Image (cartoon, rainbow, N blue to C red; front, side, top):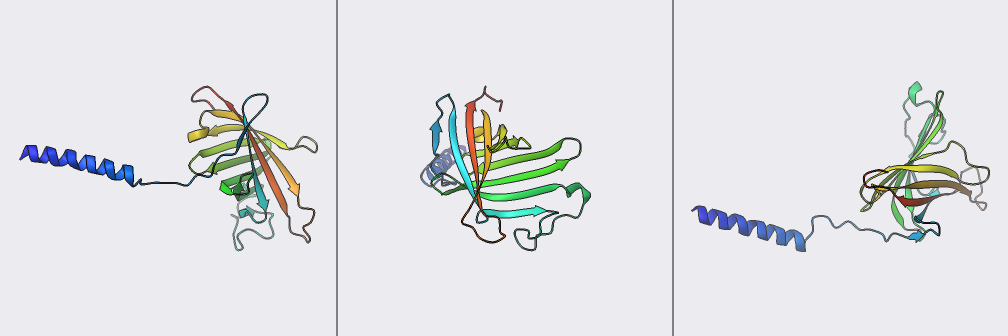
Length: 191
């Protein structure tokens, strides 16, 4: 009786393992990473967001037309200077590769705070804090603070640049946000 139980248990484990091998539980699609090697070391990856097409959510106390329509921003003094946006993120081939959130807040003690979180399915997430102002006509620069999975041990910087669409007519804001990450390896376990 015990031998039959042990043999059945072992055969069950083997059958389960074979089933998971041939029919994986999760087969998440992954768009190919378009990473370039930087001449001064590290790697670079470019993303962009087409506005307003890729904007999924925008909320703030000062927004007249929230996205999606009917979104009600909390009527609390704590959220008065905060703007939160969610976007689809595209690679340089214009394929949607993930989502991003951008939070901007005005704090009387600290000043303007801007943070990005990029989530790229099957790769991981990146968290970056940005400088309050862009350097002249150039991009706003930030630091990659933390990451998950593929980005857990990578440090570097993120730049953000707004490129207006000159052909767009009307009051609606139109253009694209260009995000460029410059990765540099960090010691294991540190961002």
